[in-house]
Image (cartoon, rainbow, N blue to C red; front, side, top):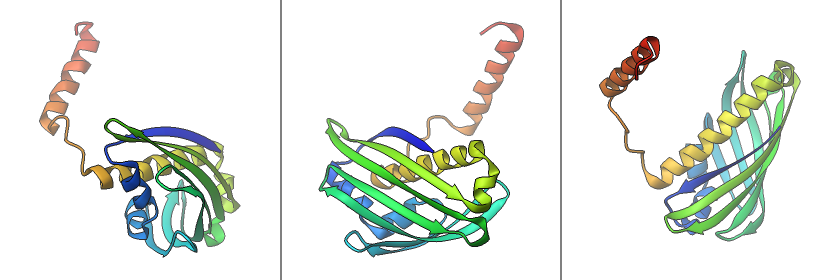
Length: 173
C-alpha cells in the first residue's frame, strides 16, 4: 500500500524537522502511542495500541531514521509486531520545503501488514493506513501551529445543514 500527500505547516522547516526527531512529540502525534523512547541516531522504540476493523492489538516495534538532510528531508522506517494480530512494517520519505508561510511537508508512505491484519482485506487496511498517516501529520501540524480555529459553532453548523437539506429537498438553494 502506497500513499502520498502534502501539508502546509505554519512553522519553519527547522522547527518541523526538530519535531520529527523528538520522541515526546512523536508520542503525542502517533495515534495510539503509549510509549516512544530513543533518539534519532540509534532509533526509537515504540508501543502503539490500535484497532483495525475487529482486530485490536498492541504493537511493539522499532523506528529508524536515515538519509537525514537537516531541515530538508529524512526517511523513516519502522516495523512492529502485534502478537496474534500480526505485524506491520513500512517507511516514509518526508521532504520539507520552505514557503512564505512556513513550510510544505510532503510524504510518500509505503506500508505492509501480515497475519490476521492481512486477512481483513486491502480496502480496510488501505483506509486505516491513510487515516493513520493523516492523523499523524495532522497531529504534528496542530502541535506546531496550535489548535485550529473553529470555523462555525455547532448551532450554526446544524442550521446550515438543515437549510442545505431543505434546499435540496425542495430544489431551492
